[in-house]
Image (cartoon, rainbow, N blue to C red):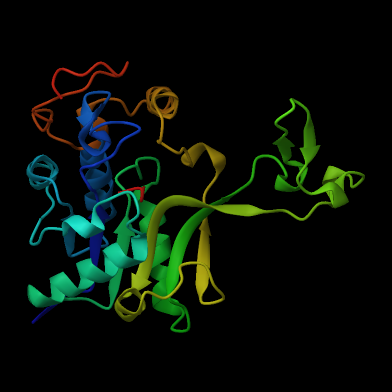
Length: 264
């Protein structure tokens, strides 16, 4: 058994439906997963960067970007119903069978392209200084109080989902946060036990709104590209990705294909 300090596992299945081939779709000329791998490499926190996938093309691009694919994810963990805990438990077990062990393993989604290298460093430091926690994960504050949420009615009207807050001023509402869906740094045993990600044994690494963007639809994709362009991070040099690393069935930014749940 080879003991490492920490291992990152990028979860990237091949069956995305809302954005076909999302994990290897080119975002401003660079495959999405290649961007995530480049940020992990820049962080310098992980002895190994591994990709959990069921897809040959994803594996090829991941290896070209500097990651390793020492095992394949089984079909039953690559459908729309596969959860992060089951996928990570399998990944950690597979790594141990491969002869790799580490006290800390990070689960990283391929769409984690807005986190900075030092976000990983801060999360790792938090895990190292608090033995009583299982995970550190990214979260952000809701932009608008969820207590003000509305439900649209079949007849065309609407109603408050939480009517008890109808007369409460915004300043009087409890501040709420949501999982940012970027990464989770966890202890190996916590992954193997499939302990809940959100509990009293978890700690939050808060991200500002400008570092959080879901990429589930083509509108999300366009917004993410706009953010990267605004930040001046559109080219290969910005993320350290070799420009030749691209999918063999590229998809254009407007959704046209040339051939072509769990976040990863």
